[in-house]
Image 1: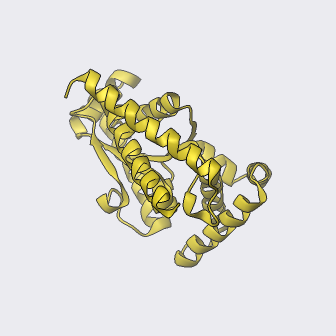
Image 2: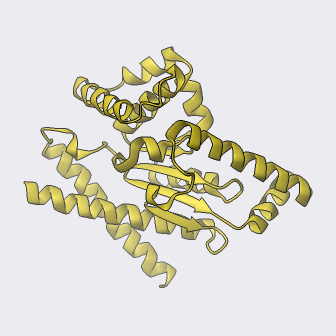
Length: 241
């Protein structure tokens, strides 16, 4: 497929997304089936695979907020920041978000400590606002079907080592050690908090291998998948109307 044709398809599908948002504005739903008020994308990745670059590019291309794991952790650990975010929601959205959080916590009784419950509240509140790209921190597992698209970026160890060596000026042995430690830490977080196996394909809508795709190609694939999802949602809402 030519790049020009791909770009036309992406633009056409994104126009569908914009029409869906206009439809939702003109026909508010009686419950929370309408979803967030803007695309919500989660990006998970192997260390050094280019997931951060993808999340940053998507946020820039679509005009979305980027929330990475460090920002989310900061907010979850600061109740004043958390409350300030909740205060930006209207009353109806706050009520829906609270019910959503209660449902998550009831299904996942292992989230008993204050920090991880706060993490769930922060991610769900940010998602309720809409228009956000989440990088890491298990957002795909917290949001599940509430996210418009859950993406995972992978790559071979060799290519990940190459990228880290070039970016951080490390030897291959040093880069491999950093990658192994980072992957192990992220996998431990997912296993301990969510009790699922990291990288399980059923927890993602789209898996991209950056060995075979450059950043622009990965962005195009995400936009096409996102727009296809929006088109399907638009058709469903029109049937309801």
